[in-house]
Each structure stands twice: as C-alpha cells, then as structure tokens.
Length: 465
Image 1 (tube, rainbow, N blue to C red):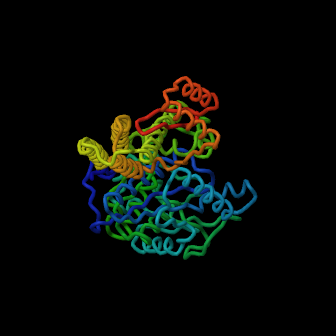
Image 2 (tube, rainbow, N blue to C red):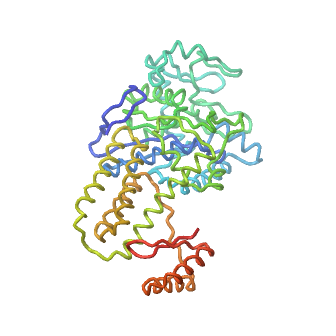
C-alpha cells in the first residue's frame, strides 16, 4: 500500500515500524460544541484507513484525543454560567451520538488533555532543560522555534516566510513572534493546575505530543488530521516532540482536504456552517459518511442539498442490492449453476479492483466504483436466477467490501401485515391458475396501499413505496 505523506510530498510505500502493526494518532475535536461537517471528514476518512489496514491483516492501535481544556471551552462555560468540565463532558457525549450515527468505531484510546497534565509538564521541563523552551515572568512557557532548524518542514515553508506574518499579541512576553505557548499562566477565574512555573494550563499543541508519547511511543507510524492542522498545530507538534525525544515524531503524515458548502469554503462568518447533527436530522447520518468518502480524501469536497441527496440515492442502490440478495437467498431453488465459476471470477475481479484502489493512497472513490461494478453484476445474476451458492458468495463479498468503508450499516427488515401477506399469496395462486386479471387487480390494489410488487426469478419481491 502507498500513501501520500505531507512531509515528503510524495506517495510512499507504507511500512510499519513493528512488522504487522500500525500505531496511528488522529487529532480529535475540541469539545465546546457539536461537531461540524468539517470535523466529520477526518473522522470518516481515518476510520476507513483503520478498517482497511485491519482488513489487510494488520494490528492497529488507534488513538484519538479530546481537547477538553481550551480558550473556546472556557468561553463557552462562561457564556453558559457553568465550568469547563460540564461543557467538555456534555459535548463529548454529543460527539459519541454523532460518531455512532456515522458508524465511526471508537478509538482504542481516547485520551483527554486534562488527564495528561503530568506528561505535559515532564515534556515542557525537558524542553526547558535542553534550551528549546523558556519561562517568562508571568508564568507562561514558550517553545523557541529558532532552536529547531527544521521548523517548517511539514508545511514546506521556510522560517523566514512564516515570520513575515507572525506578531506578538498584547500580553505575550515571548522573545520571538514565531515562538508558541507550551504552558499558559492562569488568569483569574480560569481552571488551572500546579506546575514548576506556577498555576496554569497546557497550550494546545503540547497535549498531542504528550499523548502520542504516552500511548504510542516516541515515534509513531501515522499521524493524521485535517489539512487545516498542518500549520501551526502539526508543525509545532513535530518541533516540540523531536526536540524532546531526539527521534522522528511520525513516519507518515496524512491530511484530508477541506469541505466547501455550495462551492464556498465553510465558515461561521459566511453563515454556511453546518453541524453533523443539523444535517443528520434532515438526511440521516449515513449519507454524511458516504459524502465524506465519496471523493479522494486529499481532494476538497462540496456539500450542498443536491450532493447529499445524490449520496442518499447512491446508498439506496446498495441497500436495494443487499436486500435483493437476502430475498434471493430465501427463495433460490438451485444449489449449483454451470455459470457460477465465471460469475465468481467476475466478483473476485471486483474485489481485486477494490483492493488496488485502496492500496493507492486510500482511493475510496475508485473503491466505491468497484463496489458499484459488483452491484451491477450481482443484479444481472439475480435477474438470471442465480444459484444459492453464488448468492451466498456474493453476499459475503458485498458485506466484506462495504464493511471496509463502513457502509450499509442501517439495514432493517420490513414486515407486512397478515392481511397484506394473504393478498400476495392470493395473487401468486391467481398467477399459477393463469387468472391474470385477478393477479393484476391485487397488484394494483396493493400499489394503492403503498406496497410495490416485483416478479423475479426467485419469486415475488415487495417493498414499501
């Protein structure tokens, strides 16, 4: 498998540090509000990465943090007249509602910033001792970017270019505009923790370095997140981690592209900002997941009403095929078919196409195309009266590939009233007796009640309109 690494700007063969095992860290949400559809993309994309690596036989240790102390969380707590713990706990629970809705598997570890203060202080102390960080008189601690000659290697911007847009804000006592906060001195009324530099709380960037090291080690296989995190967040993580630990921080960096809304970048100021909950209440969660993986993860994607409706329709094709397989399995009469071998070869070819696409930098768009090719051949086979053996084989392959992408997870078996079932049976008898007028009348009567009948080689199939 090859993946595009932001660090090297090229596709690289994906090789784990420990044979057969990948350690992955994904930056999680800052829990001060409901997650928005921009948050949903890395959640879905890197959930698929994890699923696919496991599908290929690797053991994956997946860590995703919650930032549970931050200026935004404190501001939200003040607005609501409560405390940061209440806010963060509430929105972590709301996160789980949305994550379950989108079929996001829980990470192996979900650390929180406030649960790793000791590790954070240890790293900051080490950076100060090695001359890479300094404390100022008010209790803030800053990382000195000039002590890390490779600063800018992830965003591919020389330090002098980055400095051009940097400035020192009012109240900051840092020595250089490019230096960034590792520890923030406590302000009146803010939550704080004891430290060698006085009461305070961690800066944003340091928490991920601390949790990476604690749960995955000094060097991890893959660090991933949204494109917006490349600079400064991930750039700063690299600087502080590599200065502290003396080894590369991550071997591969994967970043997903932005989300536009009606072809304009999503922004609160533009009023085109949507939470996952907003969209799910109108269209359901699974179309959101489908949208997030329908394009290559590095490309920007566009959200609009038309696009999400197209995702719903595309999903319906998958559900219709899977339901047809179930129906055929219940009604198939032949155990073997001379054409099974050729059909199995076709189905296997689609699996190979799926794997080839996913091996090429997690190309979920082409992987979906392979699934729809599979669906096309399944539908043809069912119309021609597929054998029970091939129906079982096709069902397993369909579930296997859709499972890697985390799709078709809301299947519900519909049931009919006994009176409706009786009418369907009466129609079947009428057809056997060549009483087509009665059969057509029953069909039309059922259609008027919202029950659509379809005659297939396996028998009569129905669905609600």
